[in-house]
Image (cartoon, rainbow, N blue to C red; front, side):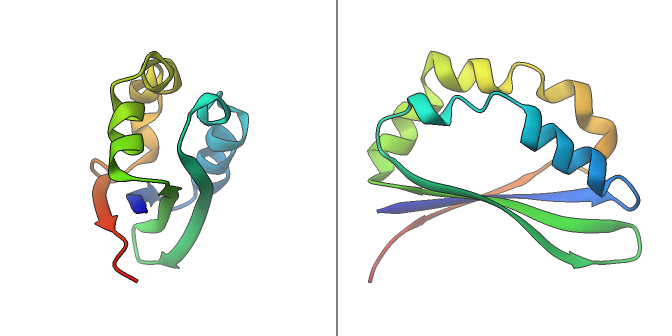
Length: 100
């Protein structure tokens, strides 16, 4: 298995807007082979932002890499730049191979 996390620092006061974007977007994930599960996580608050993370579990690293090269990925992310005012800086990606 392979687990990915994208961390988002969401501008304080814009949390509802951020969550609405995720609830209403066409993620295309239901059309992807190898996806095991997806979660959007809300984390701690700091002075200027609230931390969120998208958390996905994939059957393999290859399944994730296939997603990144897919038309479904491009379709799911085509409007990403329209919401950059919700963020304090760019998202931070982390990928993990499951050991146990």
